[in-house]
Image 1 (cartoon, rainbow, N blue to C red):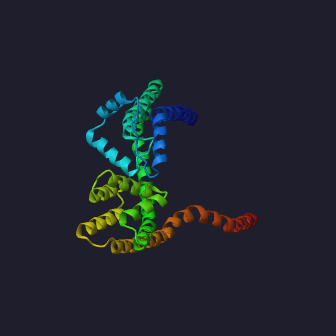
Image 2: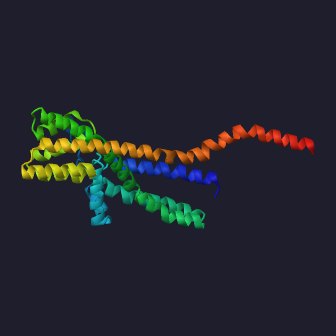
Image 3: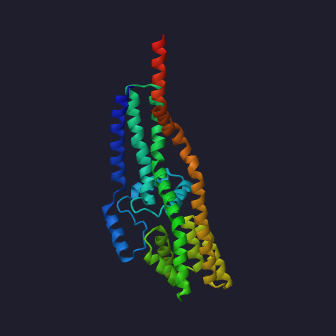
Length: 295
């Protein structure tokens, strides 16, 4: 098939897939409810029940293995449980996208059954089925990086609040109230867990499990041990804040050391050829003119 035919196929598949995805994930009533809840409690960003998709949810749950659905739920927790992507919609969207992609690929294959189209017929539904996983995983990775960056400054704020006379939970609430990123949202969720009756250990361990950031997990482990053995939390915060600042500096130094290697390939394949062409081009042209003149 020609390039124009592939372009026309892409122009058909991409809008249809985007339309199907939009019809599945858009829920104006649920979004309005979430915005209302966020207006009352700023730190909450949880998924709301999806109305009118009970049967579809059951069908999606039947088509998805139990262990795989649990893995998706953990991945959504790491991504901060986006309001437009609750687990119910993901379970519905995955087989729906695979079905749409499968129908489109079959229609294309029946018109001109070639080896490449048959391969696309098999591969396209599989790729469409895992597209939501890729989107959620990328969001979770970005969110974990942001939490890792914000942790050092948040611990410094909590340390200042504790040394000024506030309790640990009051300092936690102050950091959640003054912050704007995903770490502040997770701290607010932890405070809500404490308010509904969960123990400190359970709430803190749930914080580490939801975020799945190694530095935050180490901090939570230190706080839980200090709370269990009666160690003053000011000293724990001072030690943890110092370690986070050191790790942040080490990560910056590591990125700076990797920079020359990352610049090497663009320099060799993009900048140096153009530079050699500009410098050596006129000399090569003169040499060729002299050789032609002597012949």
